[in-house]
Amino acid sequence: MMIETRTPETGVGLRRASDFSLSGLLSAVAAAAPDRLAVIAGARRLSYAGLDARATLVARHLIDTGIAPGEHVAILSFNRAEWLEAVFGVWRAGAVPVNVNYRYVAAELRYVLDDADAVALIAERSLAGAVAGVRAGLPRLRHVVLLDDDRDAAPAEGADYERALAAAADSASDLPPTGGDDLYMLYTGGTTGYPKGVMWRQEDIFRVALERRRTGAPRAADDADAGERAARCPSRRMLVLGPLMHAAGQWNALSMLFRGATVVLNTDRAFSPARVVDLADREGVQILQCVGDAMARPIVQELLAGPARCRELTSVNSGGTPLTSVVREMWRAWRPDVVLNDSYGGTETGVCGASVAGSASRTAAGARRFSMGATVAVLDDRLRPLPPGSDRIGRIARTGRIPLGYYNDPVKTAQTFPVDADGRRWALSGDYGSVSADGSIELLGRGSAVINTGGEKVYPEEVESVLKAHPDVRDTIVVAAPDERLGQRVTAVVALASGHRPSDEQLRDFCRTRLAGFKVPRTIRVVDEVKRTAVGKQDYRWASRVAREPVRAPGR
Image (cartoon, rainbow, N blue to C red; front, side):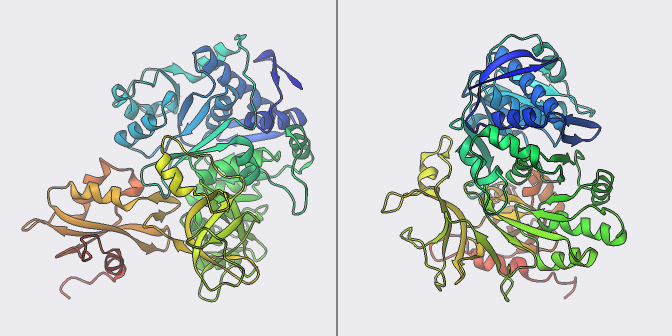
């Protein structure tokens, strides 16, 4: 089957209809509902036909500059319409987008771009400066496209995004065929320590994270069927607050686009609950996507101060980290019938299940309970699923449609995606849990020391290595401490060199030049000696107790 695309900007081109390729799915929705509003981002409004056409221009520019199918193109940008144009354009060119965290400092950027084998970069001008400083160490990076962002920025070399797309309108380059076997890759800091690229087939990630359907409804037969279903869906608006460079924000935005909804992006660089409420109210948002209490609490506090606002808001979806019971109660106080959804999943597993407020989603002890899909299980030490009602604790995992593995890392691929005795391959989530009698899974916590702070994952050893590089730090352990707003906060237990006492802020300033801001310890506890185990390893249990102790008043 061939699809003809004709727009004033792109001319006429023929390409093979994709078998659940992500760019093909967008084209299918655009063909079925061309004039429906797809994206609201600041002053920009894009219809589905407009978004599809702009993606084609990005694809043609990349092809004309020599980007070949299968090569990797990094995107370094805050939330904006161009992020979505770019990601679909890279897919349409047959290339692989690489999400880059805009909070990374130069050394972290160099690591990700090098590890991903990125040959091109689409970046905001104010963010591109950090890459320019390390570009000498990135010999594969041969093309840069710059997005204007109305901010003072150091001069950077690269093609201007809008000029590049204008020139691509005259391009006669053929678009490569795309299909469900094409690669989708998402870099994550998750349980892997340093960021790693999780590789999926595009059809698989669509099925396990992006395809939304009513309970009991059959799956879409092909991309044309998906487009027709989207056209029949009522047009709803979701405000996406999560960054598109993370799974939660990206998957929510893509899933709404594939069902014909309107994605409203918060384009502010800093989170302001007052501005978020203004935006949701002004745009008539029905669904709010947020990342745990860090966003949901200050937003609902704004709404409680002005309860008549956001009359059309009916649902709050939290991904990345669950909502606490306290915050749920605050939302109920604002509007008793608001639907509160916690989704459970991860970059390595896709969306596994959901906990809906109003159901028995939490045990009496406050543990989180989720209704999971049939391919999700709790495994024992021999990778065997535990039966419902078992009193044992195991590792939460998924089988079936799971990632191909980590890019360039066969060792960690084997660890995270093991094969059981029957030849069945699993994706381990990194979480531990138990199976209730009704088959739901009780989430007990991560099996590693990874800290989840406001939805961002922090690997303690990375922070420890930076702190230990400070001349006045003798030893340290970095752990999570409870935080009412962020869920967890990064806390450093530090032993100092004799006779030295740098201030907490001096230690943080030292970290800020070497780490992204979310990794910098919010709390620093100074001790005489860092406790270690008999074999010399850090005693994380002891450090966690220290981190949770109340701060003593001076003189006591």
